[in-house]
Length: 328
Image 1 (cartoon, helix red, strand yellow):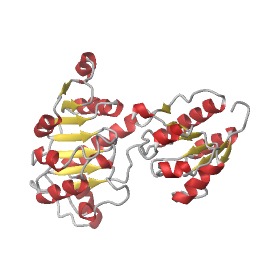
Image 2 (cartoon, rainbow, N blue to C red; image 1 turned 60 degrees about the vertical axis):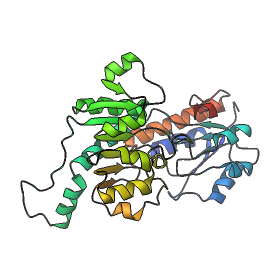
Image 3 (cartoon, one colour; image 1 turned 30 degrees about the horizontal axis):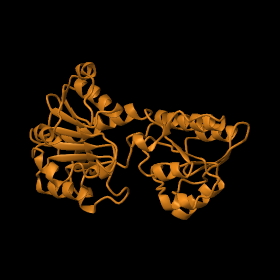
């Protein structure tokens, strides 16, 4: 592809600085609005582009890739997660897939702490009273929550984000525990002051806070199912900033309603935008619209990674953030 000006189609609006640089480098088709493309629009975009730049909201399955034609050579995903793309089928069709790992680590870890504090200290409830003008003044027993210092935090998934959460939690005085597919090196464990649990069930039963920081794969779908949620202490809370599919949302909703789990802080949901209406009504559930990586700095850095992946590919080299099925 060296020397050619690639045709690039972007599925959503990106930060202005990213769109401007992309226009300088490639023959790019940008979005006029921020509406998500339909399935048919995505298939048509793949058919006319050398490179497609989608995001997590764009489901690209094997059937769509089969209709893409022969032109598409790279799917340069704007985001780290690629479970919305059928990577195996793409590779079989000679289409490379890249992502933007590592960019949102600190931003997402910050949001984990924000959700912990929001749930434990009942921040949304307090805001609601103030915004509605219903505050009747200070009371010794009003809005009592839980102290974060001294709590046992169980991190499910100790990758980049999980480790960033561990560092922040230690600074807040929490006791850090974790479960991971592979145990960390002893030096890393010591640096993070983290205790490893081979058994997820045993860890969950002892934690005050559980933070879900693992990707969505076939093996992690409903990893936190009804049985495991019932292992949690009634006064425990769960926070999820990774993928909604990891938690059985209906089971979680039932247990929150019944008081079998004290609270939940969720930035992601099992069915994307279709949030369980009963979950939305609960005062012990803090819900956010997938804001974990939503900082200006982070979104621009994500765009810069996309640019580097496309430019490297255009120059005839392997994109630095190439995703292969064995990684998933």
